[in-house]
Image 1 (tube, rainbow over the protein chains, first blue to last red):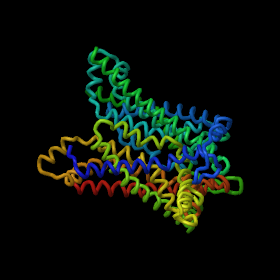
Image 2: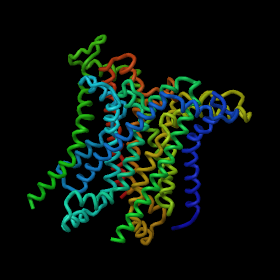
Image 3: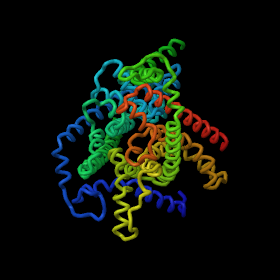
Image 4: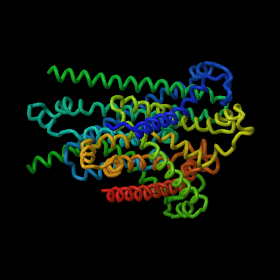
Length: 270
Length: 288
């Protein structure tokens, strides 16, 4: 690769860009440790009281558990649907597949508020109660296009003849999928699970319309933003989410690279 | 052979059917009902199910609503353009300049977005507010004597906040399309005497356009209907379409009017998106 001023310029840009992404977010942990209800400079002292308040907040813990449940269910459901769809579209000639793909990606082209209220109208018309289940339905709807996109781009480039070869060598359809397509798709599956989990864990508006009396974490946070004296505690929560999720991403990536290396050994050994 | 082809189609369809069922139940049916409601009207607490265009007359006729549609589309177009322009060099850097630690960069770029969307938006309120980070910082440095009032509660604050909040949705699609580019095409062009700038505009940019289009659309659609950002940092001049739709489903309780406003905003978003995508495709065709 060519070295020169454009290379240095681009690197400097990348650093500035990272600063733009990080600085606003890092104010959350900074002020969550500040010993003042007012979120302003100058800092007045170090405290962990906001974290203590957060951990003893039952409503918050309940909302967190709800969000983890909804996020997990949504990630599994939408990734499964995404995998089935991506496999169908890449490996079989399905009549009208372009139209079908267009239909499944429709939620990306409709604002969340519209999806939220139309699901609300449907549930109301069908006399179904609002609950975390309706939130899972709404989140699965918006996550399926993400799962399909991730898995389609992972499966797209693959040589279909690999699975055919496996079939010719006597494996049945399920084992061929399990031993050929699945390992090849695994990085995509992990990315899809992570992505759909984040989208769901973070989603506010659809959950706001569909959650009924339950609260997910974003709904809880929204309800707290109205009370100025609650703000430092909310910042502590934000900082905690940031740290937990950073550890999760790093762990997932570590697991993924380790898994890939193990597989390499197995394949070389076999 | 014919039998094989048919069975292939059947197997594909079988694999697709769970997704299709979910989409029909959670997307098609609710949208059909939304369309139906938009032709009804609210009569006190009851729904009047006689067909009427009254809700559309209000949605499209009232000057306040029209201005709101225009402002929402304007804000989100601006956000899409700014976010994509800022993200492109970043995605390009990771795809073409980083050699060994691409994953580290991608993770670094996504970590800030693992904290709640609400809190990222709220962070900007904290930064831009009257007693916020910028004002209190500048005051304690003695650079200003009174807090600056123009920072928060206006459309610019909405644009800045959204451009920050949606950054990874621009970086990732663009990165993926850049990463897919066959490097030998660039080498071939270099061997045939094309300089760096020419290579970028004739190979890299056209081949990365699908990612650019995807990024712009992925940002444009949800930001047009964003509720949180205009509520927190928009003030009265930064109100967007989702805020008045929400009101119809919450406090005022006029679901048919809310449905008509939602249908109209979907149509507006759809038209702008289609125009944008076809314009980009046409532009891409010209480059080649």
